[in-house]
Length: 471
Figure 1 (cartoon, rainbow, N blue to C red):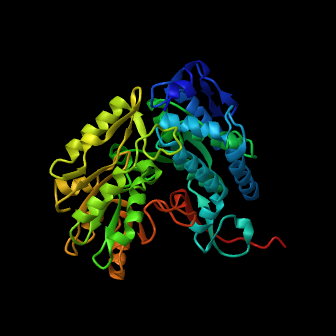
Figure 2 (figure 1 turned 120 degrees about the vertical axis):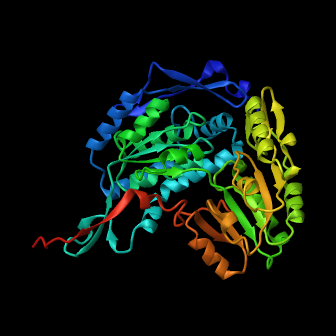
Figure 3 (figure 1 turned 90 degrees about the vertical axis):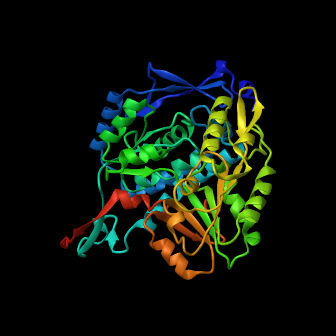
């Protein structure tokens, strides 16, 4: 990637916290490096006390009127995509974020543009989620008896993920609903949240409306404790930690899958399958990590492997790059983990070829494809739910007798089938969040389509209301 030349250690980008009083530069600062090991960012780390005081100040403020919130979100989307913020123009931010996260620069750019679009359309997503019989503001018709859509609290906290800018397209919906938002960024990619919170503050939102709180683990726990509702990202350990807390929305592993039934020719859908696996650098929760086929899956697996093997490993800052990069030792650890999980499967692109050095000290992660003899039970079923931060897919046979069992615990299932009854079964399965019918890839997104339920499902409730005439 040539990061040492692109981001010299003598020219660190300073990223400070953003609290009620504006920028806050702390004594405790952390140096953030690129995947090649170059120091690129100096990040302020706030203590738990600063977190609690910030959220306390947020709770004391009242939300802006709806019209002002909508106008400010529209302006913030424009500034996010065009302005110089924190000393970085849009392209400079994209390149720096790519260098830190290892996500290819073109993928990072597309994800950042997607964030701008999501901010601009936050009210569209909110309107799609609102119950038809509920008013967002009782003033809409004070004499009519019915429901008012009310917040469950005042402050919404976010523990953001660092696998791409796109995670920051969701939480602005909370601002649309009148929440004040406290964002704890990932140190794997702290720039998108910093840029977005600054853009919001420059667009009409007050410092109390959106806070940027980089912090350590103790501060992270305080963010969740102090807020009324929180959203956290992480692996299965994070899912397990917050499973019993109704105030925490957990975005864990996606384990997205594709199912192709025998009435469809998989050759007609190979582009969709490969795109679902490899788009977004293969790092997103909506990337397909398993493909099931009603029939012999071996020819399909070989075709997938042939297509994925053609992707050239390149440095992240190459506009042609499609694969993520990591420091060499981390990449080797990922490959070792994959090798252990793949025991008993047939490797078509195995762990031994995953690590591809692309510069001093860092590597691209080549795609992996493994063929399972059956989804079955035990270890092979577990393999279907192994999700890694690069294009890695498990291909297995599927039968009507197996039913939806091998597809459970999936954020998305793309079903390439003509069987309407099977679609009913997938939609009825409570552990499957979204069901897409071909020709939609697993990463398809739109404001009116919930990600893992609408965020507003967790943030809002219906309250009965009836008023009297002012006459």
